[in-house]
Image (tube, rainbow, N blue to C red; front, side):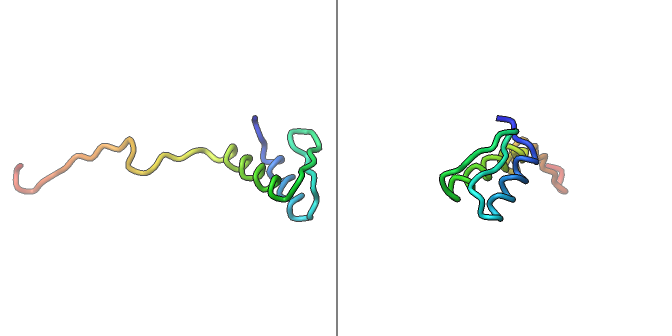
Length: 69
């Protein structure tokens, strides 16, 4: 599912106001609970954030010495 920043803004505003519905991808979505809304918000945040590889993966280290080895 392709989410937009507007979807994230809408669900954050709904959570902040205590509403149980939000406009997501042009449709009004009614949620059963605040927990459901937070779950969807987290999913939208993950979809909008680029994944980051753990540091050190894909890096090449070339050792250097000062004694001619």
